[in-house]
Length: 495
Image (cartoon, rainbow, N blue to C red):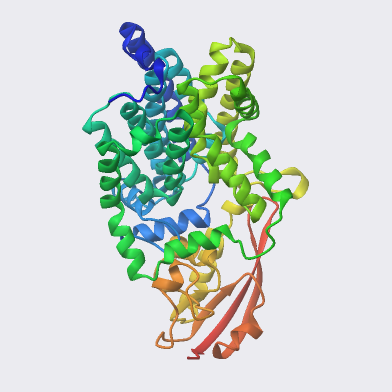
């Protein structure tokens, strides 16, 4: 059965020699980009951001779920570190490799919807997006999410044009693994419904057994994570709801504007303006291919903008939108012969790829004028961990504890492991994975070295029989930044 969507898919079967040539050129381009990113990662002076350190700690204890995220990120890091080692480089190494794989999928998607020429340039555009340039230097849940989103969209496009049960199976596997990467994969279903309604194919979609087979496969893949959530009080689901943060004021236009503007930084200013212009022209008529790609980009941006208006949103929360948007904007700019805008955007993005790689290599090695260090968040953690670890060992402390997830994660990664690092549960309900899985308890032998970024003496006295402030120390966090750390000695955790 064909839904009559993406009529341009027929072009994918034409000009096979040209398609092979573009595939070869793309392999060279992506290989060069991957080599640069791996080299930049190897010489990077940045330490793990606390989210990255947290994911690493999860990878030491493989499971089907974790407090704030589904499990696939931990599995990916575990595989990498088993093969490569435990350095920051090895923890992050999957990121540029997976992004390269995603760009290859974008090529096949664009080739199916348009032709190999559009496929080549769409893949290059995606691989050099500002958001991807930044993401390739860290490890995050967006990395595998984007790969499985692109695979799911490719399978969905195949189904729309008569693809068989293999395409349905591919869609189901991609959806399932995407959900195990990040729950934002659920946006895919929303986008599919938008396309079905817009294109008029919703009845045929809802009546197609292959769609239900795909959903069943996805459900089977994600089932172990659902079971984990049930067994752990729906911890991940509750955290996801907490991230939405609808408890305060629900009128935040400044947050919505900030998020919307930030998308120009994720997708690129020129490309984002082009995307908005394409969306504006929808009222003058839209092809089925355009409907498909707009359906899998605009609704996500609009949804997260509304979320930002109601509360807050991070710039990367709409990252999945830019798989389809990369294909659409590339095709429209090239077909409109807007080479100046296209080439200008690509040149800026390539320069940014180089700048980010070089900047990461110099992080912590040069002073930044103006007193603001852009690498402050990824510097100085090892120094804190080394200091706390040494002080705990020399002072005969039996455990190190903190009151912040960030500190717990960084101490777990950078400390020697000779003194256990535990989380202080300040309340009745765990607020993060460490409080859930490695809480400080009344049975923990003392004394305990307590590390905090704030003077918690009064608050700690409500939790321990004795509390003594040992030291207040300013620790360097980059060339011009520092963190003030409070070191306490605590004994006798109260029930």
